[in-house]
Length: 136
Image (cartoon, rainbow, N blue to C red; front, side, top):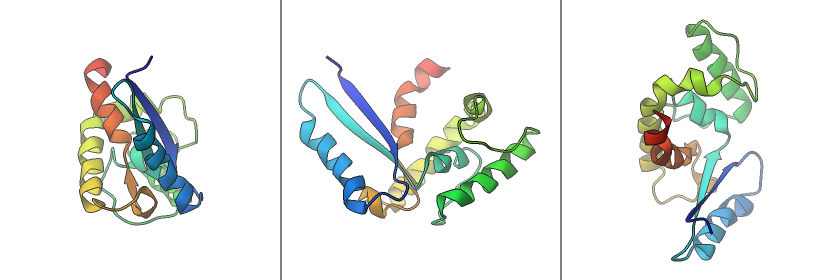
């Protein structure tokens, strides 16, 4: 049996009730033995990536994140951002603490809002905080 189950998902264009239902189901099915964690990124995982380089609070469409990420990666003298890029962890790792801090700022701004209403917002930092001691 697993103690923690981490469910990481983008909100993309899914209906708000579906986005929020994952959070509700995680709470419903959590018990003394297993805790389910809904780690959404609204609208996309690229928000989490971008938070490694700067704080962003603009509600952008997910496609707009790619150009911003490519611009940040250009400053690192590397090629443009592409989905499923195999070296993203290595590129982002030096900025992990900054990303966590920026994501927490967004979480404070979005406090009390549902996942579907938290744009932009991401809960991915919660898993990374837990894993950080093992990643160093």
